Length: 72
Image (cartoon, rainbow, N blue to C red):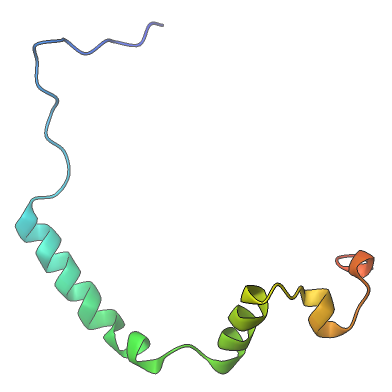
């Protein structure tokens, strides 16, 4: 079956939500997640991010040899 080609002179159909609906959704999402954002990043995640930024691998953090990761 051939894919239909768009007509060159016909404008593309408008899709998506209008600005009012997007604003309402945004407001409701902010209200729902505001408390979560205020809690901040847990210490264990902040430590992990620092280690990843420093180039430390999980094996380095655990004191394991590199080739033992993921093996039983």
